[in-house]
Amino acid sequence: MKHSHVRLLLACGVIVSLSMGIRHGFGFFLAPLTMEFGWTREAFAFAIGLQNLVWGMAQPFCGALADRHGPGRVLIGGSLVYAAGLMLITVSATPAAFALSAGVLVGIAMACTTYSVIFGVVGRVVPVAYRSRALGLTAAAGSFGQFAMVPIERSLIDGAGWMPALMILAAMTLLIIPATRVPAAMDATPRHGGAHPPLLAEMARQFARAWRVRGFRLLMAGYFVCGFQVVFIGVHLPAYLKDHGLSGAVASLALALIGLFNIFGTFSAGELGSRFAKPRLLSGIYLARSVVIAAYLLLPLSALSTAVFAAAMGFLWLSTVPLTNGVIASQFGVANLGLLSGAVFFSHQVGSFLGVWLGGMIYDRTGSYDLVWGGAIVLGVLASLASYPISEGPVAEQVAA
Image 1 (cartoon, rainbow, N blue to C red):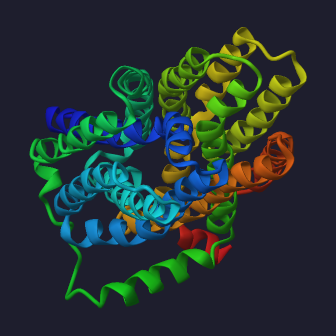
Image 2 (tube, helix red, strand yellow):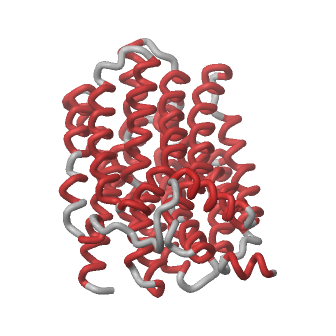
Image 3 (cartoon, rainbow, N blue to C red):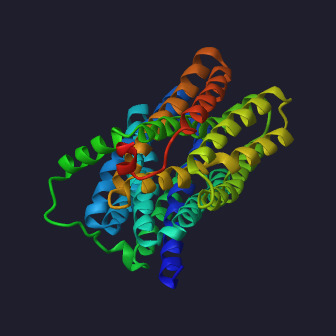
């Protein structure tokens, strides 16, 4: 890759690390906020679930805006909204206010500053021969953000309290702005032939074209399961461990290990995706997740078993991201990658909403997470079966077939 490509990947890595890393530590705010304001776990979980849903709903629009007008403006706007959302959490004394700040505003910010917008840049700029590797490296940067930010957030909450911690994190989101000024590709407006059609009409046309392809629908189904599993675990694992008598340090270590091994998993997925069929790799990842979750529940719960579970799940955590986006690029090209990646990601976030919300709701009603753990296992098997027959050939070839 050229030097300019390396600079682009570094800038994208910083942006995704900050955006994803800060968001991955939200589970640590569950206990202090529910105790401070007397909320139920379901109230907290609903807001975080709403965040994922809004993130997914806004993602196709943010991706389409970046496709048409360039990603720089979208990323800067997302950084400002992210900071505002985190600051407003500090004065959100009711579940409704928390849903607006942590749910709606942070959800919109995530749509502007994460994968669909960033992958649109990488997919257009990096040559096809290096695309899968570049997508894997970018996804790995988000994993590094989780590894680095989770212990920082835990330390901030323990040392300064949850309110100052949120203020510091809000300031950190503004570091996204200078990162957008590094590569010229962030300012470049993608070229499209002829006059622009109305944005919503073009979005509808491109999505309808993609929806007619069976493999695209199966990608959406698999990504739904991905969101259900990872967000349920990411938000509820600290509370699950606390319920079973394990310390907050074990939960912090578990989330950090997920982030650490996620780096290797996403990079490996990107590398393997350039050599082997991406749908087959996706199928294997979803099946492996179900096996890992089932083994964790069947074995005696301990700090060691949790660490092993976190490492194994971490390796599988975001490894679906470069493969899924690589399939989309292979099927439809890169001109509308932000839009179509965002559309698939919406399905991921519907799953995320259900995973985190059902986790809180079912716990409040049964006093246990067992039903949600079981659902995560079954869904993983179904996602494996759905991913296997996907074709990553160009759409024209699939329609002809």
